[in-house]
Length: 128
Image 1 (spheres, rainbow, N blue to C red):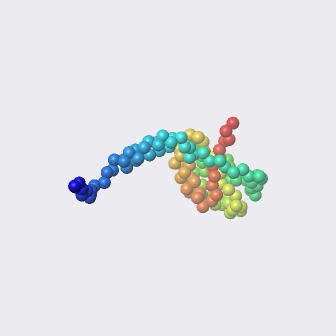
Image 2 (image 1 turned 90 degrees about the vertical axis):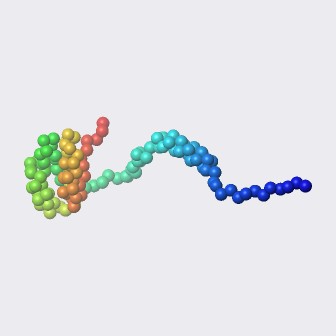
Image 3 (image 1 turned 45 degrees about the horizontal axis):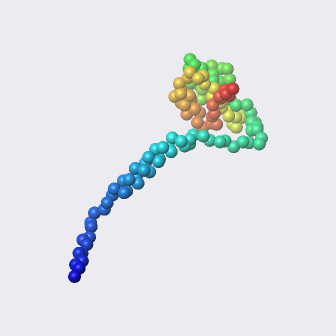
């Protein structure tokens, strides 16, 4: 007579296969992550050019931190008042900041923060 042995219930989980799969997936993601380039954005093209009703108000920030509005030198405190008076006549007029490349980034950002109630952009030189 053959005796059959009863199998005992095993109360442990073998996690080695799960670790193997996890390590393989980690290697796959580490190899493929540098190949993706999320920074490339293709911008849509517009069939017609934008027409502005008025020329933008140009604020120039020079390398020596001097601020000018359309060629008139101002202190930073007077800037907001002068912009407000110039835009009372034409409120749809945009503001463009032309900063020297040697001006610190935080100075341009603080200037933009002071003018945040208006439409503000940056003037750039196109690449050749």
